[in-house]
Length: 176
Image 1: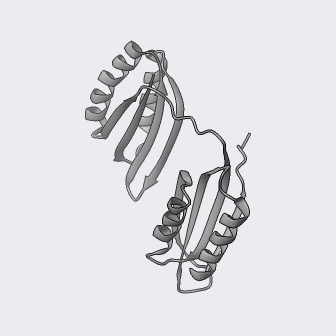
Image 2: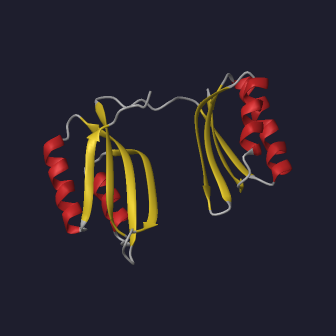
Image 3: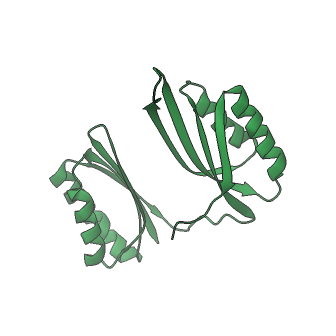
């Protein structure tokens, strides 16, 4: 059994350390952890694994930690894990001038192709030497085997050309 947790609070990392310690004291295991600071707010996502009574103890302690650190903590129990079959993961990075429709058009493109987006990271930053803002969006997608890689990639390149954006498309590799 698993527990999906989201945390929102000040940028202090102490609450993450306390939650990691909570894992070991409750005999649970962290399966996945992502944490970032946006402005002055820390956002974290955790996936914790354990049996039902270990997760029940974990859940009851989360409320106290949230109150202590003035964090918003939400959690949901997950009975079974999603298994994607007959898919190949790909890493796609798109860089272009900041435009309001860029991100929505790319997400709609994947949706129209029935391609699952497993991860999205987007960042806006100033262009060096220019008075312009760029956006970099990184996707990890799960390409179904019934979708033509060549046709989809060609259509995505055409969309990026229309949006005046650059595209990097490569098989997803796990970092060691």
